[in-house]
Image (tube, chains in turn brown, orange):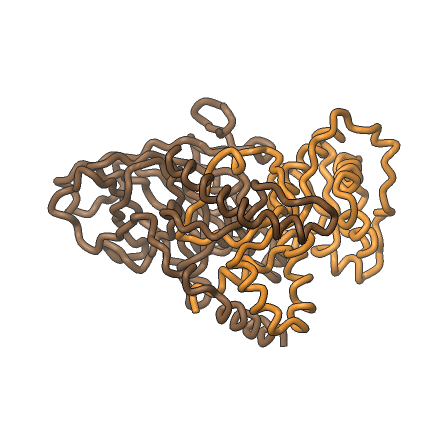
Length: 275
Length: 192
């Protein structure tokens, strides 16, 4: 009965999903299915290997976020203010207890350029137990932001700690290997913090992600050997809040790089808390 | 179909009753003055079997003030907004980085309102499922956040759980902090 109910609920929500919400850009990210002959000087590239766990039919995939530029944030805030000012009379009218929501609490459908994206594990350079993926994307600083099931939305954020790295234009940045799976029970995918508690699967998912940074032994496709390639330099990111995520977790500890002290992310190279 | 599952999961978050963020008080009261519900270990099989749903956190290694801060930070994750659309724009700025996120119960945007109309189609069904999904989603967040800070969970009655989780946010924080920093309970921790 519960499954039927959930199925119908899914259907109802699916029917109500605005088409406009599904037509956004992909944050300027293009998965490359073949090695490029040359690298564009105005684009950055990410090389990674990913695990291939699924939940039922749906792949469990990584979500990344490019830290927006000051200009992008300014444009977002201006659009939000415009929408808020327009909605304010209605918000004031609806405020039951006289408390009108502030602009920071105001949600609106922003039509600006995306800065978050799902790493599509079905679009790869090389297949295998771990799939090798090459992405062409805007240069910038990226965060391993979370995990999703399927291709959209953010099911679990790495809100309790993660890492960021820079991707320079004209260079392939190798970020190593990424792993993800459901982690309420033991997972066959290595490196994850798993077996968190079977009851966490009731009425929700808890997904986990792990990173193994590249080292000289990490395999690189032969077709990329002639191209400029450098390992990512990671920085530790401390706790953050993502009110749009269904669940929270943290990137699994990384020996020599990412640790946790009383739950707070710590850069193991410096002993300093994540920023 | 792929795209619908995360949307469902995201909608499983609390709609009208998200935790209200509170400003850290200038000074915490003496924990002796904070009244808490009865959390004495129960041998009632129902309480034991439902411990994964109805519990409180305890870490005997922390002080009342530390427990308060941990709870304040972790309960910040209970504040929800409309589902994060990915791909989409996420304004990574100071609002994401605050240690104690400020906010208030959700203000639904156009996307969420449309989705909620869809939910209303099966409102009777949703009325049964959504509270459980909401509690489960909140529980998962708190378990992960407090668990990584060394807290264990101890089973309590549903009434005691309600007293610790429903009502004035500041009072809830104080009650949970007092229990959070109490000596280790003479009971088995919940592990499932």
